[in-house]
Image 1 (cartoon, rainbow, N blue to C red):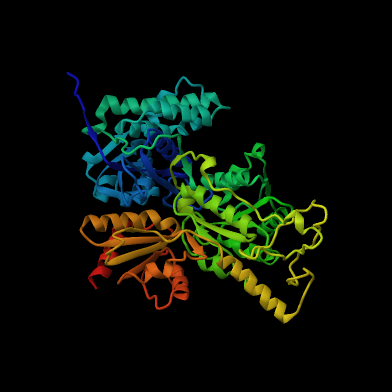
Image 2 (cartoon, rainbow, N blue to C red):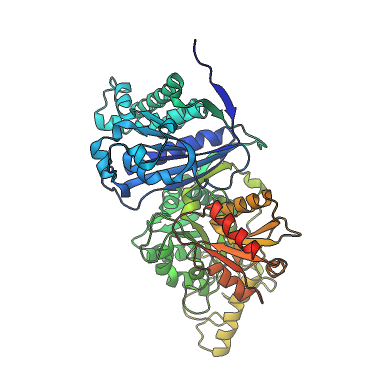
Length: 616
């Protein structure tokens, strides 16, 4: 009589796919995320891949991982540790087991645990499970490589091509384990490989084989698990990465403003995907130029802005250094420009595929002279869309370069994204010079209320003008070295930024009577929110205030920060936000939590540190 498996419902689960860089772990993880997002689960992902272009096969340094957290309710992080670990070879098991919970299920390809594989992974014996203290009963040991070869034996594919499908077998097994709908995965593959249908069908066949293997053997696991969706908001959803959401945000802003979108960029990890995505959308009025260097990327965007486009330049921290002179040109010319900084580990080349928040002070001050710029930091992969739209609106309406900060964690991570209705988004109204000023207008004539100079796009008869990098006279627009004029222009540029309206700082949690306020900015939002939730569940009085708008700061910043007895500023740097807040808020002396590991925060570590502060 066939055994009937019990279907257990879970609130959340974390799965980590790991293997060689060429094993397709990112693709397997992306498909599993897409399948889960499509059925309405909340998701948060974390791709974790090496900086090596291609490390030696089976080596410890070449392991690539992809972690996804799936929940019935809202999930804020990819999870500290996983419930299921897929390890496609010995090196993956050796390096990734530390990310598994004590009772995690582990799926391995036994064909990749031969003597040579174990040697590369620095195992001392052939008892690799015993050596790592892993209970064999928690391991789903499957000869994935051989089964994929058998599955595709009549496909006409060579062995090398067959082995590229191994990731799909593991995906099929995981889909069985969590009762996922395979049709969604099949559709994903048919769309991805639309020009190579034979490749799509081979991968589909292997996914089905992995699913069947789990169903037929029950894979040493007692139950199949289901994660239902709660509080589902009706609408069309997609699994979207932060970089793709950023690109879409720029497109939406350009459409709303009635402008062409121009991107001048030089490829750099982890920002290049924005260039790749925008280059696909010429039909939407997008122009992308892959320039010869970072300087040209920014300078060309300044030129496009002068010509009347929504101009963007994208990079990471090292590129911001190189762009700084051209960014300052936009400051003194008072032209709209969005500078996207997808932060990564530094200094220098640093950790190019890892994530940090170490560019904040560079964004605020990393230019010569008094050169104020608004700074916005996206808080999640889906918020990248909102932040890109807000940065574009701010740049266009206030005639200023704006720095939009994301980081590798939110840029490469993904979440379920409800497709927006652009009609619901606020209008974008650039301050074009009024026609009635024809004959009296000069380049630095301003709106008296906002301090914003009027924008005269080339081609308007009677509004011909010249801008440049030398200081100009406030009234005539001619070159000026007059000290009083320079002092005035410096203050006018600063006052214009200070007058930009930004939303008030929102306090979450026990906002009226918290014993501890947690403060952060940008991509740490999810981890800090999860830490707050965990502490509140323990009965602690904790609140959270997270900065998305950093310059100018929200008007209620001082009021919020001075309200609580204890405040901790947590950031992935050595204290840059804390320093900025001390500059702007009198008598503000917070506790600090600082890590610079190139990895996301670990919620358990945050909770332990915050509890220690509470107990002081």
